[in-house]
Amino acid sequence: MIVESNIVRFDCIALDSGATLAPVEVAYESYGELNARKTNAILVLHAFSGDAHAAGISHETGKPGWWDNMIGPGKAFDTNKYFVLCSNVLGGCRGTTGPSSINPVTGCPYAMSFPVITISDMVRLQKMLIDALGIRKLLTVTGGSMGGMQALEWAVAYPDRVVSAIPIATTTRHSAQQIAFNEVGRQAVMADPDWNEGNYYSKKPPARGLAVARMVGHITYMSDDSMREKFGRRLRGKENFGFDFDVDFEVESYLRYRGSEFVHRFDANSYLYITKAMDYFDLVNGQGTLAAAFEAAQARFLVISFSSDWLYPSYQSQEIVRALRARNRDVAYVELQSNYGHDAFLVDVAEQTDLIRGFLASTYEKVQ
Picture 1: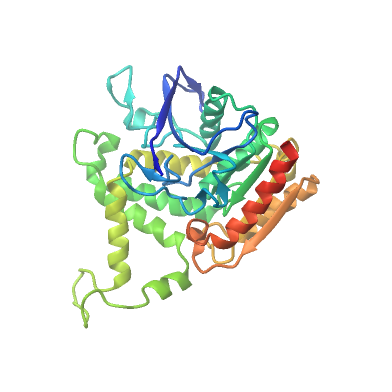
Picture 2: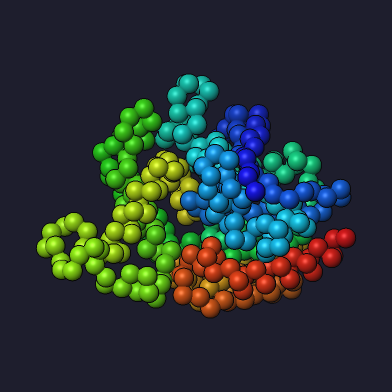
């Protein structure tokens, strides 16, 4: 299935920082058909480095979507039955307004004059999109990692617009360790002389710093077991150490490849803004307790975590479940056994598919 992205423009959006962006554009893709009653819409929310291309083959790049193994005919999110949407987040660099977009006041890219954004700002723009499409209620909101944060924000901020939520491998707020990893990535970008205080759009981009940031991030997405299985201490195309600082080990080659690949598809300033939005996210938001934060939530929940995920460990998902149960909300929780670490939600899909298919079917019955 070849898919193309669509772009919707709005006059403005008010942000949590007090700033206003005007105008603002949002890029999205859709799969399947919206039924006559508009009761089968599912909003898929991407993780930090994702975009609107969640499924099918991109008309632009010829590549499959980042969750193509989960979205499509007969898959977990069955497009024979459901209408699935995915939009690029505010602050992104794949069609939605972000730091690389042109500031209409100056005629130049926003760069670091772009206002600081939050997860709730991202969700506010998504709601504007859903409203524009005439969808009164979403059958479910779902996503892994940062996508899970957005799903939780949807359920709390717009409880009357969400029938169910499936947050996967996520948290209600970053721990000090999670903030620390993001800060290392940001400092790697900003330490690159080519970053030039964010003003690099007509010049050489900070590719070295962004590549290092991605290398650090990618380590956190895997697990010790998956790295041992995939690389071990195997050497790269040689039988002995080179006794230099070139690539010796397979894992070094892999990380360098991942880093260099990333810089061709992602904007360094978007990296800074989006990681900061993740660090700012706190579902409690001054309400005292997490249970209190869920007071207004009306959705059914399916919370999924993975045993080997040390970036977003299962205890963070369990905190969500306890808080929901404290408010007597309808919540199911499963910790899936996997060796893939945080990346498991993208690659280890067999059990996820069974869980989600059943959860969606029972949810859909309730709205018919």
